Structures are given as structure tokens and as C-alpha cells.
Image (cartoon, rainbow, N blue to C red; front, side, top):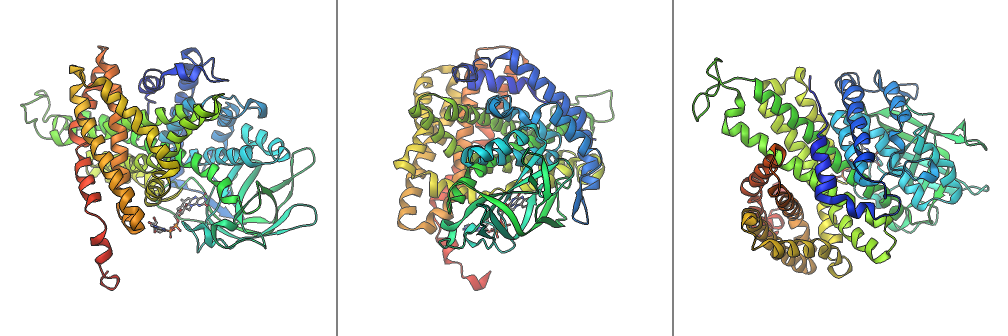
Length: 590
Ligand SMILES: Cc1cc2nc3c(=O)[nH]c(=O)nc-3n(C[C@H](O)[C@H](O)[C@H](O)COP(=O)(O)OP(=O)(O)OC[C@H]3O[C@@H](n4cnc5c(N)ncnc54)[C@H](O)[C@@H]3O)c2cc1C
């Protein structure tokens, strides 16, 4: 069975040495952030994930969720684990102290999220969705909605959902048919069918708070006419307890490839009572609060899967013996050498490692900017930090989830046939990872977001939040001899990114099809360059130190620069080739 040890050493490194806690500590509410506060949190989370969540990962996958008479049962052990999770305070980690939260910054929260996703991705869906609901209500809700729902979501007594998708409407939310009719008492009656709703129904919490996109009778067509409603499963009583049942039911559970212990529900709203969140017809932008948080969260799901797949691939490669090493026999006392000696196996392990640690580094940098963007007293500083988060959100979602899938399949490859059969748990990682590239906006849609919305935003302001620091770093390091092997490849990739960005922007302005044709390759080129920046910064830190951890950092940085980053060359060639070969192919010939 797979094992998991939280990578605490690397987590501390990205938090304290790479991102650095000085900027964090300067933020209101973060003054106490330091090893005394953070280490026990990370260590406790690591323990909980390894001892409580990991053992339920396989059984949850085998058993799945069941639906009987509208009631969904999660797999055995899940309700108890959720109660323990909640009682230990993990649902309240990042929430506002005004609502009972612990107010810890995202820089710490994202590390804990990664551990949960490594240990049990399905379990992590339940608190993950609640976090999104918390964010939407805290940003757009009325004071009454905040005081009613936020403490319950913080304590984890109630959970949240995000109800966007309908049978005929996935990516294109302008097609939504769910209706909201105003009632005399100021509430609305919500009617419609939602599908694929994660945590739509389950037995973990006393109440479920659905955040539902619907259209008012006077709604303008398309996405400009969508409003957001809060629809509780049980209507809260005056004193805030779950009261009468609302007219919302789970009518079916999806049977799916992975994350089987996460309930994916078809939901029927039959004149259910709901309340508007935010302004009429402005629901999509309110929902984007949730979606942006969720996109970072889904990126971290990819990272979590990549980490556990890597750990289990390494342990297998150490013990499985097959063939002899090409540099001579390594284990003469055995009938064969461990497969770890083979260059192709090392290639797979180092690819997994370099991408996983690169993702963790980028996620720490983005989390720090996220904390600055919400906590810094100066609006201009907040905005600058937010620019970086906006730019990085589609990149983190898409590149990290692609990394999760790639690492899961590489991990399976390292295990050979023993990875493909169910017994050893490696194939579950692949099945679980695959959805992360699809939900929360497919990775193709993330690429369009980057090219269509983020590149040109505010006259290129988002772009500058990345381009300027990279340029400054390259300039500062270009004469440092020991850094040459990292700075040269970074500068090359960055040059490609700059050139291609100009081309994509120009061609896209003339013809949007060109921007769409370039988007996915462009996003990956951007993501790898951002990771190269993170790797070069990590190398700079590691060069100053000398122990096994830093030596491995440097060796991984070298592998990244030599064996992964060159992919940017072919990506830039693909982007520059333009979209003609896609456009010219006749539809009938497909
Ligand atoms: C397990 C699971 C859990 C989910 N959880 C939730 C949830 O909690 N809440 C919720 O509301 N939804 C949820 N979803 C739905 C999920 O977010 C959607 O499946 C996803 O957004 C894609 O929509 P779709 O499946 O309808 O695909 P479609 O929108 O039909 O897309 C099909 C393909 O076409 C591409 N495509 C579509 N439009 C464009 C375009 N304009 N340009 C380029 N390419 C395009 C897509 O990238 C994709 O490759 C979940 C789905 C699953 C499977």
C-alpha cells in the first residue's frame, strides 16, 4: 500500500527561505508567523494526514459513495475522520477570527492543503468546496448572511457547494437555465437541475450550503444575466440551527473514473428557497471569487498527487531489483541491481521530483502574494500582489494538474506492471488525478483565460508583475559565475517567452482564432519559465549552503534546466507556427 511522509523539510524551505517570512510577518495578523507557530501546525497536519486520511484513501476508492432515497453515504470511516478533522480545527485554519477562524495566512494553508490532497484527494474535496463557499459569502454576502453562514462553515459543522454546471451547460455558463423567482418575503424560489455537483449531498455535516447560479426573470441574455444565490439544504432557524428541509434533493450519483469517495451529485432544485448573494445579474463575478480560490486549490490537488506518486515511485525503485547497472554492478550481493540505477528510471524520478518541487516553489511564491493582496494596508501594494496572483492562477491550475497527471503515470511506469494492477495503489493516483485537469474550467479554458483575459489586462500590468522581477533577477545574477548554469537557461527561456508573448498578443488582436490556437502551448511555455525562475532562485539559496538537502536542491535545479526547460524551445516553435494548420483542416474530414 502507498505510504506518505509529508515533505516538511521542503515545505519549510519554500515558506521561510524561498518566499521568506519577513514580508509575511509585516502583514497585519501575521506578526507571529515563524517556526514556533508554523512548525507545530505543519507537523500536526502531517500526522493527521498520514494516520487518519491516508488509511482511508484506498478503502474509500474501493467502496465509493452510495445513494439511497436521496441520502448519500460516504465510505466507512469518512464521517469519523471528518469529525476528527473538524474538531482538530483544520476547517478553520485560514478563516477570519471574527467568525471563529484561526486567521492563518494562505502561505501556511496551502501547505496543509497539499498534504490533505496527497493523503486523500476525495476527502479533501469536502472541506475544499466549503472554503470556496466561505470566500464567496465573505466577499459578497450581506452582514446577516455572513453572521449566519460563516461561523458554521468555519467550524465545519456545515459544508458548502458550488452549483454551476447543468446538463447542457458546462464551460459556457451563459446557457444556464436554472430560474430564480422573487418571493414576497425577499427570498427567491430556485428551480432547475444541476449536475456534477461535488459534495452536493453527504453525511459529514449537519447542513449543506449550496451556492447556486441562476437567472432572474428580467435577466439579460448570456453571462451578463447570471445571479448567485445561497440555498441551504435545511433552512436555518432564528437561532441559526438547521430547520425545515428545503426543496433541494440529490437525484443521482455519478459513477466515475476516480475520486470515488467524493460524492458527485445531480441536484434538483424545485422551488427551493434561496437568497441573493451580491447584486442581481452580477453572479458570475461573485462566483469568480470562489472559482479563483478553487483554481488555486485544484492546482494544489495536482501538486499533492504528484508528491505522493513520487514518494512511492522512489521507494519502489530502491527495492525492486531488475538487470544490472550500465556503470557496472551496484549490488553484487543481490541477483540484480535496484531499478534506481537505470538511467531511464532516474529520468522518470527526476522529472517527477523537479516538476513537483518546482510547483511547490511557485505555489509558495503565489501564496505569499495572495496574502499580501488581501492583508497589506497599502492599496497600491495590494494591487501589485494581486496582479501576480491573477496572472499565475490559470498557470497554477493547468501546469500543476498536468504535473499531477504526468507524475501519476510516470509513477505507474516506474512500478511497471505492478503499477498498473490495482493491488499497489499507483493506478488510483492516475485515476484520481485525471479530473483535476477537467473541472474548475478545463486546462484548455485556463489557457484561454491567460491569453484572452490576463495578457492584455490593464495595458499589460499583470504581465509586468512577473516580467519585471525576472528581468531584475537575471540582471543581478548575470555576473555571478556560480549561477551561470542556471541564469543562462532561464534567460533563454525568458527571451522566448517575451518574443512569443508579443507575437501572441499581436496575432490575437488581428484574429482571435490565432490566440486560441496558441493558448495551451503558450501557457505551458509560461509555466515552465516561471518554474525556471523559481528554480534559479532556489539554486541561489542552495549555493550558499552545504548539506544533503541543498545539494539535492542544486542537483534537481540542474536537471530541471538541462532536461525539462528545453521544452520551451519546441513550445515556442509550435506557438509561432500559428493556427493555419488547425483552421485549414476541413470539419467533414475529422
Ligand atoms: C468529478 C466532477 C466534479 C465536478 N464538480 C463540480 C462542482 O462541484 N460544481 C460544478 O458546477 N461543476 C462541477 N463539475 C463540472 C466541471 O466543472 C465541468 O465538467 C467542466 O467545467 C467542463 O464542462 P463540461 O464537462 O460540460 O465540458 P464542455 O464545456 O462541454 O467542454 C468539452 C470540451 O470542449 C472544450 N471547450 C468548451 N468550450 C470551449 C471554448 N470556448 N474554447 C475552447 N475549448 C472549449 C473544453 O475545454 C473541453 O475540452 C464537476 C465535474 C466532474 C466530472
